[in-house]
Length: 274
Image (cartoon, rainbow, N blue to C red; front, top):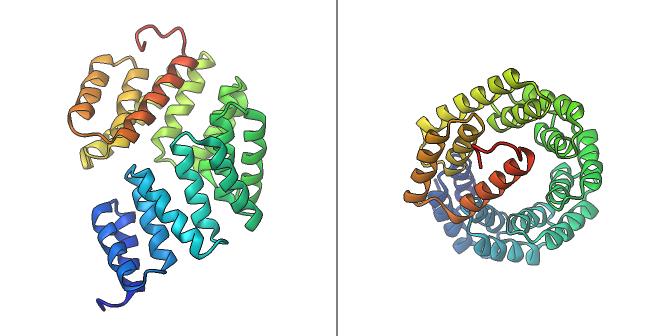
């Protein structure tokens, strides 16, 4: 590797990022930016790495810099919008998604992300319009399809939710979160035994991931939520205690609390989960 080749160093950093090795990725992005302080690709990817690590302020600083260097960088603008959304700043997130879509009206990621933001704001009809548009552009986008299914579930349109979640699982059989959503939908439809099967499969997949990497805190928080839904409270409590005592990032814990609150809203009569 040419130690002065900023592109090669950035490419290696991106490989590390995709492998989940964020600290090593950051070192490469930092090195590339030292070589070329206006290298927008490295700056934006460093921002994305910070975002994945929950370092939102650092992520925003990098995305802002990348956008200053190239105000038409739709990827950086969408990534900044994602960061604002994760911080709970929905209106600012929407502004970024709108801007990215103005630059590229077929930007499926930005359109679906805008839909997710409206979903979080409780504006389900507008969320559906965005998911429909994203899926029209890419009918293989399992993420957008699952988000639409979740929105239908929140609107109590369970048949439509089930159709979308079935499709998302066909496209991504390893999606434990999709299986969980389908399990909850079936539970709400009174299909208790089928719901248990989906939750059990979600637990199995998340357990495999946990055994491969117990420091994947997002997966661990998913796992304890799945155990809660299954009524396995003792195991859920064990996993929850493990995350609290093992340095789980604050942003991951906040996301878990949000998911738990949503679960309680959907299943108000589940006293054991409460």
